Length: 335
Image 1 (cartoon, rainbow, N blue to C red):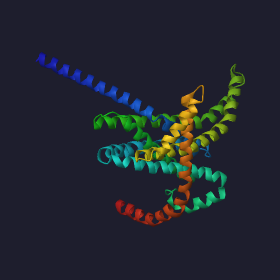
Image 2: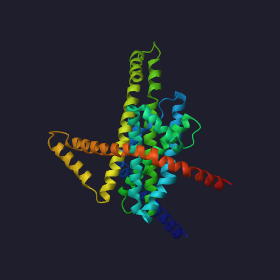
Image 3: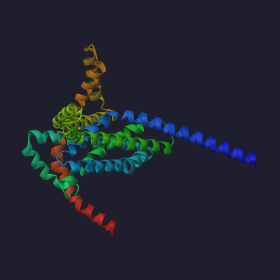
């Protein structure tokens, strides 16, 4: 009896060690996969704050929370099973779907640039595609829906990059790694966004430090500096976020073209980056990356500009025809 108990305890200890090793493997692979997607993660953090500007301070954190929840749903409920299913059943569909998502990012970014230089024409364009937007009962709802929609594309790219970085593990382990990546990246991105958005409140609190305190003067000075800097920082993040959408979208499309045999644009950018880097005595990888990123941005901006009339004159009218059918289908599903 004692021998059987000892054998059972040995088996439990062995299973515990295997489980611990599996957890360590999942964590290690998740860290590597997340690092591969770091560029898109940074873009996600830069894009999101612009969706929160213009609201009262009391609504900022709830809005970020709702966007973060939508991002988690995107990653865990939709994209994770879709990525695994496509990788198993139809891997050839991943690249064209990512290219469509990249074109959407280019369109979103180019539309912001178009609106800045031609506000009247951009207003007419928005009026034409108004019915394409998700049903929104308020400006806040529309902003949140738009943020989650953009996050979906960026999250799809993050999950695709992460899946490609995972070695030939079992289906369950791949799912666990993707889940860890999705949760970790979402927490990190929206935690940073919350800190950025609420930094002005911290500045106001510091600026109103108690005068009798010894550290009051430097705290007040730091608070005023934060308050004065935040509008500039948010504007800069808005510009960076717009540029990031165009650059990431253009990069996705160029990579997709390379997969389908049209690799000369990517190769030309790589050669141009190498030539510029060779002429620089320092920070050569940085200059090579800048040249390639700029080229992807130009390509993305061209795609985005072309997508504006296509959306106005083709996609929006088509959606107006399909939308009643979609509503009827949703109604019959509810009943």
